[in-house]
Image (cartoon, rainbow, N blue to C red):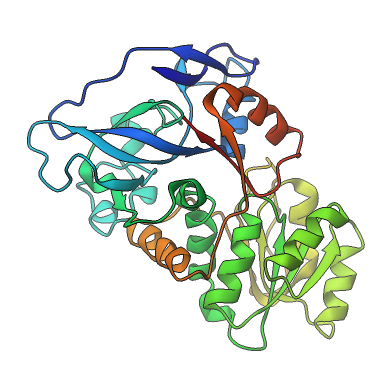
Length: 344
């Protein structure tokens, strides 16, 4: 089968021909119908050799959807032909966090060598993949996999961050979204769907801001050193109740620091490598700063329900599996609008 693999440190991924995997006891094989590209893949591929620990060759892809093709011994909860999405943050399945469906915060996954697909385990950017346990499959129930697959990360991650901050986002509140790309444009829609906040979106050019308005932003501002003053103007000098930074670079975190109100919150979602100093004299009084990671299984089900009712959709650029390396290049260059999806 064809698979998109990261094979050499510092180089683009390649399309390789590898064996079709067989499911073991308790496992499920999917015939992939869609696989999403993510900046997390580029973070991984951008690591120097001394910091890279994910194994080579690595089949990429942690946003996956497919049709159940074959099940291993003991699997009864799904059957061949079922259409499913893959819940990516795999945990031990036995701890208190996993028991709540919060495998994204499993404290034992690292020491047990459990890694998400495409981020250590063989991923979904292939014609077939193995899912380790049926609990990591969520029914699509007829949702279009190409339009839906990115919600397993680009929807789930902002949903998790926003849901955590909902108590600060009643009617009359203000939420700032920094970065309106893959995660941010979905985050804007989620804010409009489940909160009462006025949404202010920031990005680096007018084209991206036009897209942000199309998906529901009330106000848009160029993301630069003038942005905090403009945010305060829009909020009567008070600042934003919550800032969601989907970039996570030092300049955007500085915008967040200068834009958040007293007793507000900053959710640093992006993995841009930035660091934010917090504490007395740095962030305003009472401000909490959090670095959320992915989301829970139940939250993924909730995100899919938002898609099913038409409240959330993903802007998608579609590629074949042979075009995946070029799609990664376009993603790295910032030329993808919304989310890139590979269809094997």
